[in-house]
Image (cartoon, rainbow, N blue to C red; front, side, top):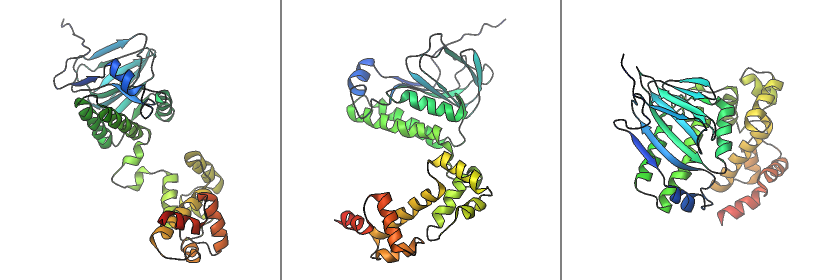
Length: 296
């Protein structure tokens, strides 16, 4: 009977950087720009045959593992998660876990250990949206950002390098939290009803639209649409629409010589005084004050 040799590291083509604790303490923990979120370890294991790791008491850092190819299994508090291509898993700090590559089709994984004041919040938000075990459809930007961070760390631990890498880390995590935003194809099939509604609003800032018209556009009842819209955006549909109108008005104020009355009409509001009040409420300045302040 063949004896399987399990190993934690040592795979052909692997990449691995462990940032020294002294560097972390002196250049990350004490740096107010990046101490909220920073990398402690980062690596890539291609076709990691017999890869195995067990941490009965968890790790000191949060861990994200992204499976780019092959298969593996992750056990968190005795619950098994099967990993395949484009799956990822987030492991909170201090949580007992183990993981292993599939013997027949071993995984290739990108992984990051991270800490910081908001690291727990990011871990929780990812878990709330996907569960600990998630799937990303559009991986190109995630991998590109990972490689940018790794390449920068290969150059050493200067203040500039660490700042660049750990500010980039925010963007990297956004690709897991908001993966649907990274579809470069532009196909509508990847958008939900609220995304479609926002597209519709963006294209019709020159019009007056009722809640019923907007909801009808995405085949939802006004009440259910309003609930879903506010849950996703934090604003009511009409408040959001007004923000888009004001955003468009700002562009007219800065890049054209149109009068306020004309701009009001361009964003679908006949009453310029109502428009001015709405603009002031959103921007904290009247349209004329905004124009004068921005062009100086």
